[in-house]
Image 1 (cartoon, rainbow, N blue to C red):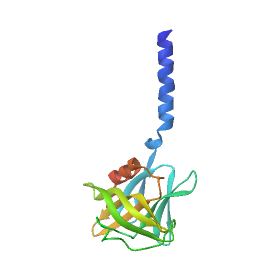
Image 2 (image 1 turned 30 degrees about the horizontal axis):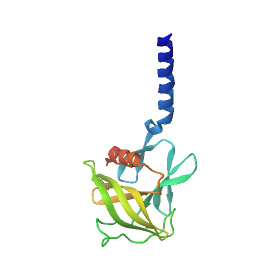
Image 3 (image 1 turned 90 degrees about the vertical axis):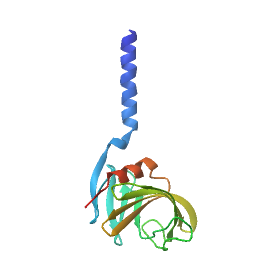
Image 4 (image 1 turned 180 degrees about the vertical axis):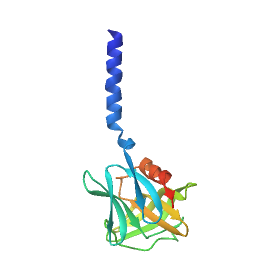
Length: 157
C-alpha cells in the first residue's frame, strides 16, 4: 500500500512540475541579417516602424522591443531619446550589469527612462560583423532566465 501511495505521489508531483515549467517550449526564429535566436513558443515576432518586437500570443502584450538607444556603462553615455511601440519617449540611461558571451551576444540589466519614469529593464544585444541589434524588455514581463536563454541561443550569420 505504501508503494502505491508513493508512486501515486510521485506521478502527481511530476505532473505539477511539468505543467508549471513552461520554459521547455522554445522556437528558433531569424533576426534580420544577424542570425537566429530562440524565443518562448508563445511569443511571436512583428515589426512596427522598421523595428522588431516580440509579443506574447496569450495576451498580445509586448515583451521585448528593438531600440536604437544604445548606452554606456555610466550616466554620461546615455542613449538617444526615441519613440517605439511601447513608449512615446524612451531612453537607455546606462547598462548596470552586463554579461558578454562568446557567441557575440551580450545580456544584462539597464536603467532606462520610459515616458519620464526611471525603470530597471533587461536587455540583449546581438552582434554580427560591424552591426548590433538591441532588444529591451518591457517592465517585469521578461525574466532574467528568459533573457539569458535568448542570448545563449544566438547563432550569428
